[in-house]
Length: 159
Image (cartoon, rainbow, N blue to C red; front, side):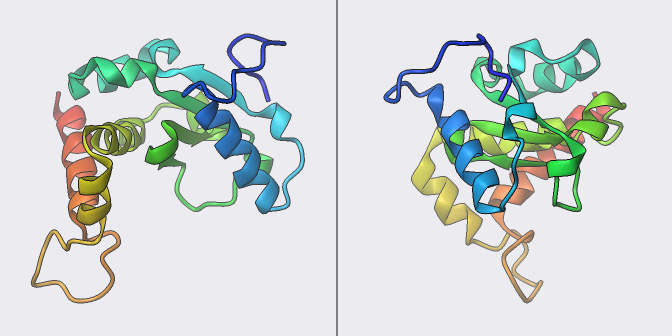
């Protein structure tokens, strides 16, 4: 894994090790080798084309979050990104990362992390609480956490 400072392993008690430990476990459980190909960077280091999305979130904590750029061969999801809010990390498919994020998925995923940082218990409760009570079925994606993340994503699209 290409870490922020090559050759430096984070202290296990350090909060910055959360993303690294999560990624190791996440990809090894899926049977994927080659996790050393994943590039990690602070959100503050994202390319200029993504900076407006961070600015619109209007929260300094966003700059301490981790973005993991995952090689396409390791990516198994349909969507181009996902977050692990409790681990302070956003995963982005490499192909998508290299292109233009025209629908601002990065802001959506970072919004998940920020919402979790506000209050982990409320985040969990809201993930099970329907955003629209007239829609029956699973609470994903019809929940208050997704409603928040989509609203922040849409804000960044019109900014």
